[in-house]
Image 1 (cartoon, helix red, strand yellow):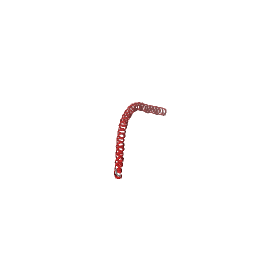
Image 2 (tube, helix red, strand yellow; image 1 turned 180 degrees about the horizontal axis):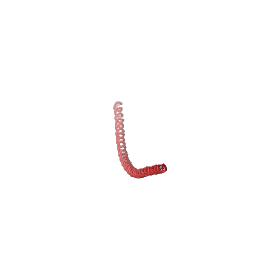
Image 3 (spheres, helix red, strand yellow; image 1 turned 180 degrees about the vertical axis):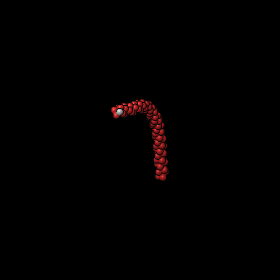
Image 4 (cartoon, helix red, strand yellow; image 1 turned 45 degrees about the horizontal axis):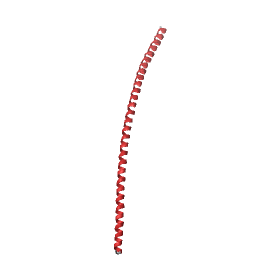
Length: 110
């Protein structure tokens, strides 16, 4: 075998070795991509579950908040009605006192 043929054989062997290593590298990269895809799918599923749980929690919170708000509104309505009634009673009372005082003053002056 001539020196040139020996060099060609060595180059072919190296090239074959590099091709094998490259194919192994590409297979490993494909496997890593597949692993990343599976991990991302699991993360997406977990995120979707988390979002659904948060939405449910928010709905329950707002339902409780709305019920509490309605209860407070009804209490304020009752208080407002009581204040309205008390104000009317006070105005009538002051009017009665005024009429009585005016009546006394008029009867004293006669």
